[in-house]
Length: 318
Image (cartoon, one colour):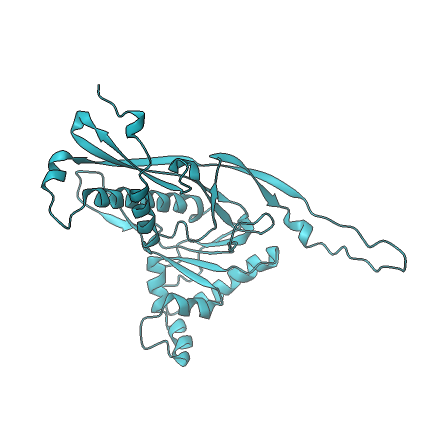
């Protein structure tokens, strides 16, 4: 059976660049926008986790002349990550390539196709790892769902979440992640419209930035990715990946040994064969099929680092 030789299988830098650019343009996907992305050289390894309590004990003492100051310190624990490799390919038959007309570009289109499928995989995995119950320090379903405009108070609910995180970590959450349906319900909530009308924000659709300012949270992210819920050959059906939930969380602005963070996204650079990227696009010949193969590989691990830095609203709207 004909198989690709070693010289035929390589990381295609131009196509990898196409893939990276495509990833950067996809605003609907939030899986790598919530927590710091940590590019790593090793597929699996250990990382440090700071001991929170050491930073909040009051151990300073009055100092008499010619005496030592009170001593203190902090401890570091370790945890581990293991980047699992995910891959998908699309074949380009010779007949298709020979008959394509400008501006069609089979290599580019196949690269974008497999990249989007990988983005969807990351989004689904992010949801399973972070955007569900049993993960964070607090899970709560609002007593009055935010879609119930007559009785709900989302502003107070979010403030309660901010206080809950601040009270046990000393950190104010800096990101609010909203399912798309949650976001649109908040846009029409009369309490929010009433607050914003005095600053010129009630005459048009309320934006993420306005919600962030209202909640006093630096960034609001909205989950817009969709997935097909049917199997191939069945009637097409679609749904949002993340559902009707919301996550209030503190995420470190960048990875750091001592910086607390709700989570980290470890991404292995080894997939790119020394190119330094966390995504790789390989192109090689499949002579047996009379086709070229475009294959995408990612290797990543989502790690929930500090559960008490997250507050999850489960089923925030109907």
